[in-house]
Image (cartoon, rainbow, N blue to C red; front, top):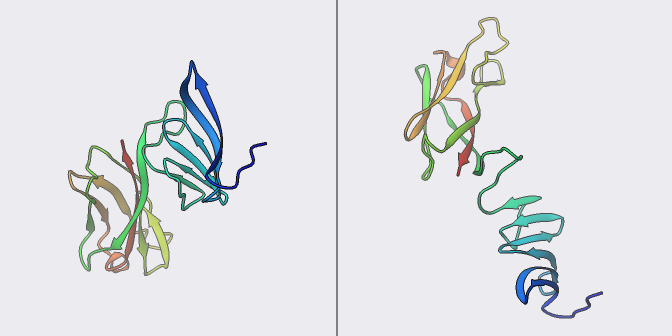
Amino acid sequence: ILDGTAGNSTLTFQQDGSFRSSVGYDMANGYLFLWENGKVVVDDGKLGVGTDSPSEKLDVQGGMKVGANGTPFLEIREFVGITRDTGSGTTFTLPLGYTEDNVRVLYAAIRDKANDCWVPAGNSTNSWFHYQIGFATVQPNSISLSYRDFYGFHTTNYRFLLMKMK
């Protein structure tokens, strides 16, 4: 039992007198932590890796890899916007730090306002006319989403779920 009233109650691990890692409880801020060249924090049911103040159930600051053969990635974010008022496509400018070399499109869709449904890229609506949504094409600084020239796809919402690779 480590009983403290201030600071940290910490169990430290060493090898030949050199610090290797520690586990403890931050009394001042009220969270459990693990330390080995970077902090892992459990605070109010939230797990933080690389941060001591996680804001979500899992909050990772830095790169991440899922699975033994997974590819390291930095983040997954949703980007939303409004399609053009005419034509058969819209272009989304990639945010700073995103390029065609480090972006993977996980999901793209347009809101079909005529049939009141979301239509993922590569699919069509269930309407009589089957208005086709093309695939998202990644270009050096943007992503283009093609679709049929149809009023239901003009001036409506689109969304992209992008993964930024390391």
